[in-house]
Image (tube, rainbow over all chains, first blue to last red; front, side, top):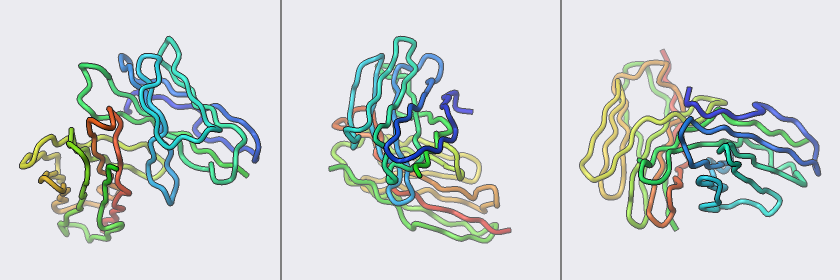
Length: 115
Length: 111
């Protein structure tokens, strides 16, 4: 158990809909990362937050947005869903700042299926 | 652009048959090279971090090594429970603290 909690584990929805994925980082970790993993793309970095502020952005679509709250949990919002958005979405956390040694600790993922 | 490439894509081994997985990287200023294990439907599980060429780390039947251009994950006398996808990832100063992952090697160990 990595200590990173993601909900929901599975989600089935229709095209055009909007969903929210939630992540609670390990206790004490300030950085949260979101990754998307699909069969043909591997693990793709979406976005990183550090202590509530956006720190880095990857290949995140404009239809997607995220935020990190004062209690350090994070949410990834996916809107106007398309079939191609079906994937596993992982949240990872790390201490961040001076305590950061580089490794990320991943949650179990949220499997999104868009029909 | 930072690139991490893993080979082979898939590997089928008999129990006890040792082998090596390759991770080659083209990055600007490697800060760290990471190995993860991922079981189907699960999140990646951290295995090792290597920081400089010549460094080696071991854990049970796994041993990771690093050169200036690539890293190897050696699996010695594997068991069926070593079956998983092994991912490597690079961290670079330009990328901040995010990791750039390779495509992974799917390892199947048959009894």
